Length: 381
Image 1 (cartoon, rainbow, N blue to C red):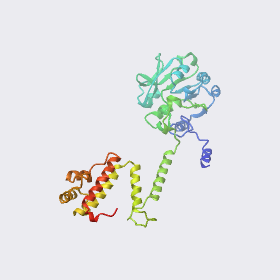
Image 2 (cartoon, rainbow, N blue to C red):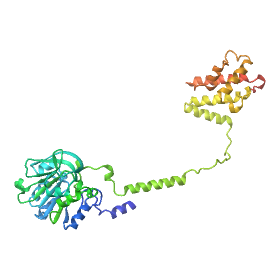
Image 3 (cartoon, one colour):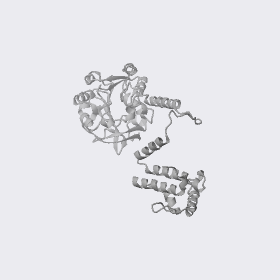
Image 4 (cartoon, one colour):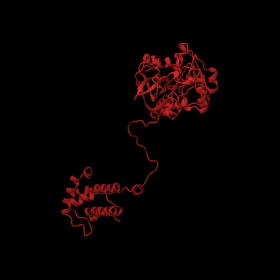
C-alpha cells in the first residue's frame, strides 16, 4: 500500500532521458533552466501533427530521438524543418540520416570523450573542447561545417540551408553524434554548456520534440544501474545498516563457558554407536581409525609405564611398547609383529583405504591390547 501511494504521488514526475523536465542524470532540466535564464522559452511537443503549427523562423527545433521516429513522423519532421530557424538532431543513425538528410552519411560510432572543435563554426570555437563522439558524419560539399572530428569525421555537422532545395526557406540543421553534452550530469564539464546553449538558444523559442513513445534505441542504451530509480543507493545503504544492527543484536555474546546439566543421560554404548553411524554415513574411515588408535594408545600407555599425557607421542610410547614386548611371549601366529616399525604403522599409520582394512585394523588393535594385558586382568567376556 505504501508503494502504491508513493507511485501515485510521484506519477507526475518526469524521469525520461533527454527530457527537459527530468532532473535525473540523463535528463536535461538543467539545460532548460539555463535557457530560460537567457530568455529562451522551451516547449515540449509530443505529437508530430503539432509541428507545422508551432515551427517558425524564430524557433529552434530539437529532435532528441530521431532514430525512434516512424516514417510518417519523419515525413512531418522534414516538412517542419523547411520553416524552422534551426533544427538539431541528436545522434541520428545511418538510416535516420539518409531519410532526413539525403546528402549526409553517418558512419561508425566512436567513444565519447573531450574533443577539440577543429573548425571555424563560431559556436564551436567559443565553446572549446566538448564531450562528443558517437556517430561521425561526412558530406560532399565544403559549405557544410564539420567540427569535433574523430577519425577524420565530424561529430558535429552544421548543414548549410543553401545546400538543399527543400530547405531554402528554412534555417540550418545541426547533427550531433552523441547526446551526452545535453545530459544533466555532463552539462558542467568542459565546454558542454556553452556549446548546447549556443546551438539551442539562438532563437527565442525552443521546440523540444519528444513523442510520447520516444525512447533510446539500441545504439543509445544505458547500463543496468543507469535504469534504476533515484535513491536506490541510499536504500541499499540503509538496508545494510539495518542488517548490521540486527546481526549485532542477535549475535552470540562472548564470555566464559557455562556448564549445564544435560536433559537426559545417554549411555556410552549408544553415544559410541551413534558416532560410528555418523562416520559410516559420511564414509569417514580416517576419523574412525583415529578414534580406534587413540583409544588403544590410551589403553596401552599405562600398561608400559607411559603417562596418559604422553600416550599420543610416538617418541614416548613406541620405545616403551618395544621394550615391554621383548619380555613378553610372541602374540601368536595371527597377532601383530611387535617391532617399532610395525607398531608405528599400527598405532600412528595412515587411514585405511576401505572398510575391510578398517575392520582388519580394529581386530589387530584388539589383539595388541590383549597381548599387553595379563591374563588375570582381562575382563570377563
